[in-house]
Image (tube, rainbow, N blue to C red; front, side, top):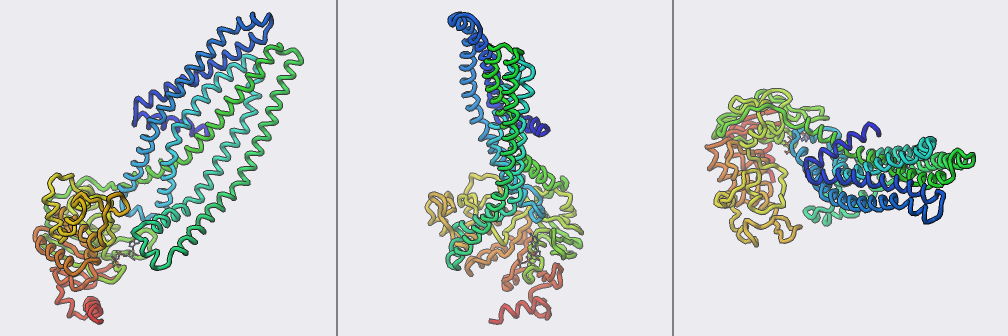
Amino acid sequence: MCRRLPAVLGHTARRAWAVDRTGAVLLVGCQLLTGVSAAVVLAFTARAMTHVLGTGSVSERLHAALPALIAVTAAAAVGRVSGALSSYADGRVTPLLTTEADIALVEAVCRVESSAYAQDGFADRQEAAEVGVTRTRLMVQDAQRFLSALIRMLAASGVITALHPLMLPLLLLAVVPAGVGAVLSARVDYETHYLNVGDRNVRSMMRWWATYSRHGDEVRANGMTGYLVYWYRALSRRIDERTLAAAPRLLRIVLASSALGGVFLLGTWATLAWLAATGRVALPVAATAVVAVQTTLAALSQFVIHGAAMFHTSLYLADMRSFLDMAAERAPKRGDLTIDEQVDEIRLDEVVYQYPGKSEPAVGGVSLTLRRGEILAIVGENGSGKSTLAKLITGILLADKGRVLWDGTDLAGADPDSVWRRTALVPQNFACWPLRVRENITLGQPRTFDDEPVWQAIDAVGMREAIEKLPHQLDTLLARELWGGAELSGGQWQRLVCGRMLYRRSPLLVLDEPTSQMDARGEHAIFLEVKRIAAERMTIVVTHQLENVRLADRILVMDKGRVIEQGTYEDLAHAGGLFAELVALSQDR
Ligand SMILES: Nc1ncnc2c1ncn2[C@@H]1O[C@H](COP(=O)(O)OP(=O)(O)OP(=O)(O)O)[C@@H](O)[C@H]1O
């Protein structure tokens, strides 16, 4: 705890300074002022008490205590005002800090190498980091309370030591068990939280899938609700069981620390009584000490309790920071070679890729050359490695062995953003972004004020009529769940995603099952357009619709991560190999 707290305080101060300098200065200044005024209140209360309980008539004693009482009143007023200002500063800084932490997390996850997602523990650590983000909102409050408790404790210690040097060590003994208890409880709570990370991660994923309106039809028409709720309940119960299992440990800690603290406190009072009874301290001083013991005890207790709370928060923040560090390590560090606007050739040299935790490579030694103007189709059975090969060609994944060269530039040494400026991908599982129609087409490109190219892309995929019918055309929000939002059909969404690919006008187009949800007219329009613009670029089509691969100049047939056949449609359809078999199966109805 002693090692962590200065680090957390330093980190909090640096983050606060970065997001809002005025707020940070106000926060620290007011905190110091609040602490100092509390200290003045304490010290002058003790002084006033000494006079009030001293000798002389009541009016003489009150008169003597007056300056101290005025100081107490003034300090209390300053304390109230600075306390209010410090809450205001907390209200300014904390939302910004939480937002910054949240954005840092989202950006870090978006930027990691794609292969990191498949690494064991990545998703669980992300979940733990999410909790760190939500705990960020407690960070400033904890630091604030801890600092003011620290100042108050220092002042109170001074007052009580001045009364008798024995008192402070005794009081410290009385609160140390509470502090140790709070730290141990924080640890138990955190351990339980950590044991539940995996289950909580699965539960929140399941919750999203089960309640997302897009999957609602599947859930209802297949009678899944009962099972999903049962499953959700079972998982929640497992999490609760772990939490409940920790409760007796927490109770034991609290009971033991309270008992020990009580014994020490009894010792303090007994010592005070003994000091007064044996005349070692004068009676008025002993009476003042009674008040001072109460206030010092409160200050010390606040100090250890807020110290433990900060320690507790710091455990979660440490998860967040360690995840951000891990994500930074997993961010692409490939090199700074760049890719030209025009690309004439992509060459693969014995490329191998194996997903983490898999025993076989998904792509096991593929070599090929793709030239500008060529349309390449990749076919093969499920799991044969087609999508993985497409990811290797676009540099989403880096080869474990072999090389992918774009006009001689090895993607392993190229800046990935410069590569992805030259690619356009229609993925097998595409996202339906809850954005306007326009942004769904231009997403990933610099902001545009000219709608003409957007309409051209929409025309190319035959979507003009559908978009014109939407309430605000290009400005229509495509999310049924949101206020004023509209929804497209599955095939219309897929057309829009193809429109985005065409809008990018990049030298490499990759279409992974681009027309699986489209009607014949949509499919025809897309492939006609792909053929029309093919001369200026390289095009890769991954598909199971074997009729569609007729448009390709060359077809690669993959099996178990390897290319087992290649040639034109006519060659392969009559070669008696896997492709011929797949064509025959597709026609055997
Ligand atoms: N993210 C991943 N993590 C681990 N293994 C993966 C991942 N993606 C794919 N695989 C595995 O790699 C192999 C090849 O998968 P890939 O998606 O490339 O096949 P595909 O030919 O595109 O299949 P489909 O026709 O079903 O789309 C499969 O065995 C699959 O289980």
